Image 1 (cartoon, rainbow, N blue to C red):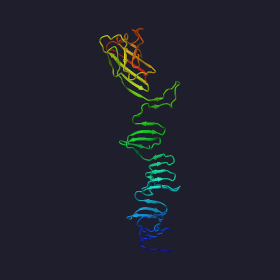
Image 2 (cartoon, rainbow, N blue to C red):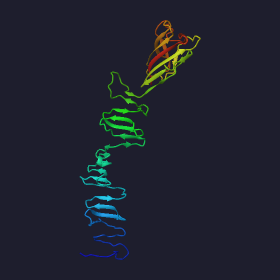
Image 3 (cartoon, rainbow, N blue to C red):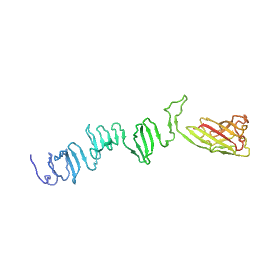
Image 4 (cartoon, rainbow, N blue to C red):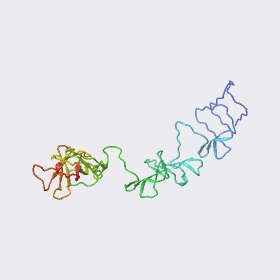
Length: 341
């Protein structure tokens, strides 16, 4: 075997790097100033170490170390538009400070585990179906934390990161418990009961999309009145409105003999189905002048009137309560149920 010992090798013109058309083998430590261009493979074997096949250093610090078994270690940032890291069909890929305590594990089957793997991994992603398992807390920018509950009966739970108060539980059987209100942000949505059994009638909807409660102020015609605000209340559940009210006469002069009409209902009666049911008691202090009866609608969907159903003054020509049926400072109490659109 021929050997060449020299301090510098240049091309035949002495102007640049040499060309080796048949390849070159260099043994020992070699220093190359400039680049190495090869049309095929560059093989570097650092025979001085039984573990390292290739090593690159900078100022005495190892930056790249490729071991004889194929493992590679890089100190610093590896920049690439596309980086493929492959193991064999039975090998895992470990990423971390040391092989004993890796922070990433990619198994041969495509399973990704992130975190402190000595404790089983904090985030585990199944490569076959994309499912993810979190072994710790998932925090949001809004100040809430998502916890995988330790109780196997729960599938999901959240708590307020500020005070550690639990805010929601979803159990494995689908039952949900919330510490606050359930807010429906889109009009027309609600609770759907279509999974429940139906009655013998024709069902038109099984969506409960509204609930409301509050107070209302009745207004009247034909006499001056006082409203008892503590009794004028309503509750709306779906399309059904449940309503109570009380008004009193506070007019010394006798009111006109005109039908008393009450307006100001919190919701209009349905323009399609005029279904209204209610009753009243006109309390004139003595049974001889008291009235009881039912409530019906007047000439539109916003008014109600009181129909007489008892003596003493009921006649066919005066079947509804009129202003002069009230004694002064006495009142009428009523309640009704009706359907709105």
